[in-house]
Image (cartoon, rainbow, N blue to C red):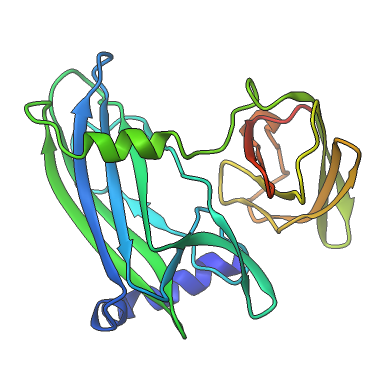
Length: 261
């Protein structure tokens, strides 16, 4: 939760990043799919020495925040994040990107017809220092033209493996009280071992914050645990299907939606 508060405090000085010339972010309007949804993307081009962060970067990074206020006919929004790099930032591990990458975004309209998109992205960029940046995108999506198709299709192939193709044989998550909060564990078994795995456990709302995990391996099994805090009101009612468990290894990455208790 602290990282979100720090982000909110820093956003008013977002112009600093533009003045420091970190690079650019461009909207690729993509195409309209057969089901009526719109496949768009953001193309990040970062100058030498600059990096930005994955959706859950860890305690040393600024998480990207997307605001869709002012948009019309925007229903479900899905992000297909490319596999991030594991970055050692002065002894603190973060997840992020260098150089160039494309973030595919699938927008499902609330109703048939065009989408009027007004999206504000607040995100962090780092070189010798880390500063917040902001990008605003206004667009009408109506399927009348295609833009950036090859880049988006290539980016969709760079994400982590799904559970169906990862060789995942078992997964169980447990939550128990620990100190002033909780501890969450994820035990995973794969058909083939993942080399040097780093595990990240995420929850679908900000009311529940999960720190980076400590992981141990035994053969092809991974045992990961992390401190967890609840910032909601009333008693915590955790939906285990809202968990996402990601494993980043030296040879491959896996993203698993839902973790049965």
